[in-house]
Figure 1: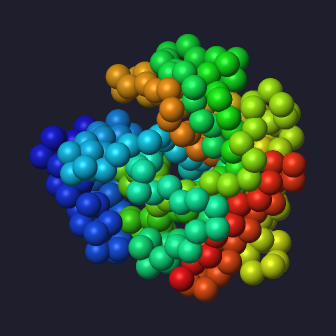
Figure 2: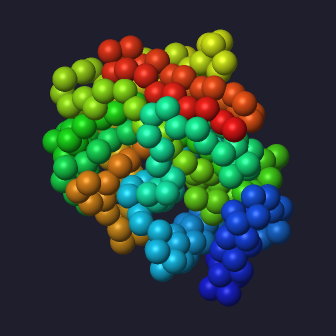
Length: 261
């Protein structure tokens, strides 16, 4: 376990990296004694400071919920991070590529809650009852810690590599579609780069939200009505460069698109 001074120092480093759009050295290489709980403490300190600075929290992201994402990162358990209002883009947005570091795109479903969810025993049924709409979303990953050799301790400390999100398509009631079979085709510059099916997220994407509510309970936290929850990617992350146009086709749930300048 790390001291509170070390946790504060790491939060300082990550805040500076976010500001300067740079990366820092692996935490696990410098703090081999660092635990997952330490990394959530770092993230919570970063989140607390952002709220104090006037940024408005609007939800959470869940990462590493599918086998394809776990294989892509070498990390075998899910994690979560915070989403602020200034991280949320509407469909068709033009996004400044240099705002982020190690920029990649993931394909997800976002759950918009009409009721709060508090663990520790939240189930997929609770999530379905508490969800007002499910909507297609792209997550923009931004890693402020060097990529090679990362563990879950590094990614959690780095707000689960959350950069931003883009939402679009058709807001859909959770019982109006079989969420397991929502599929997506991810294009970069008119070429399909990735495809996937939402059941890859813990067998049902609502299971991702249930996992989050139960994990938050371990940290004395919960989900509130009105929050947006990104349930986790069901494709591998796709690298993007300045000038790239990204479009994701979710079939009957519509499309999401953005362009990077």
